[in-house]
Length: 486
Ligand code: SIN
Image (cartoon, rainbow, N blue to C red):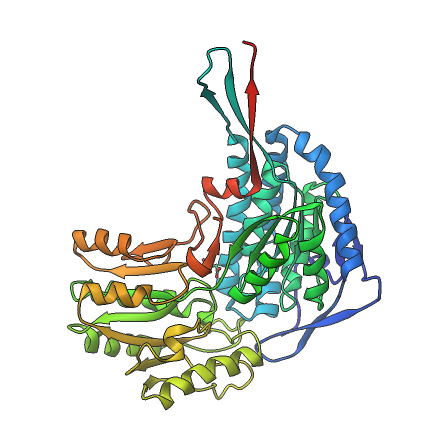
């Protein structure tokens, strides 16, 4: 696939620091390749610690005048950025499919999803309210105001190269923070294109810098140790999140962590079977299984287990694996050869321990990073597919007998991001929703994400919320002012 953009100036290969496009100090660079065929898409500047520090210094300066603006003025800039993203939706989607591999229709959808956070927080940023607290003393009042937390550092993943950035940058800028971003090395082009549109929209220099790098330790190390950075927000794996939290402890930074998941889809005998199958398909195979909230374990009650597996397999066998620009493609490759090897190792582990492959079960004949959409039965809780995040198009289907057993299986993990329940029984809806330890629960629905909901997890899936009115709090400090002598 040749790179064909309506606006070729959206293809940026330098870092964006303090409003300028620059190479790395050392002249380093790294290649970005298309996961569908391994072809090189671009060579991008790789920055290190010194450039990160400069971006943070610039952010600290830029935010002083930005935070002093009326919220409505900040909002107008975000609205303009939102409009430009939608005007360039097709080009942004093209860049995304090239570097990430997802089908073009998913990329188009993600660009709109990302833009929705800008719109939402442009509006919500005008509603940062405080409180007046009646005090025990008659001559005093307690006042609570909310202030921007300060310079924010963000580290974002490759699975949603646009939306995971937008939902951190939008609330940060809306409330008056500045933000420096390290996008995933696999997908920097989407981030850099967003920076170009931010500049065109009038986001002041220094307020939003983008630091592509092949040296995550150098950039992350500076972000987590620099005292000017007051908050680190990260979406990615739990081990990396833990490391960042440890590093942030040294300067007591606030953190938001959106980490790994192990989502169960619990399907009871009384569920609407077709709706459950549709929901499980969407949740399991979205982005070829590479989302943190993807169904990781399908838990199906014994009475409908066989019928579920049969219908589910029929639907999966209709998927069309292929290159993201092919109109017939329903599912793309996984991100790297390493990811493919990891996914296959989990399948092999399950099969070695007695699982049955209903469909798929191996790398696709298409070669490259394509893995066959897979269904496994005969699986149990000792297998890696029960314990670990699969992050690929593999659906292990577990059997359970009772509601208690389903809740216990769902909770038998250190993760707690998203879970889904299919049942027509209202009492059960409440018992299960309250009994499972997850930050988000979809009842008879798996497409739960949007800008208006608080996205986030519990347990080792992280802390903090993104989107919704709650998403602003992550970028605000609460200050108490005691007003005396009244
Ligand atoms: C994620 O994988 O973390 C994001 C998924 C979503 O926003 O729906």
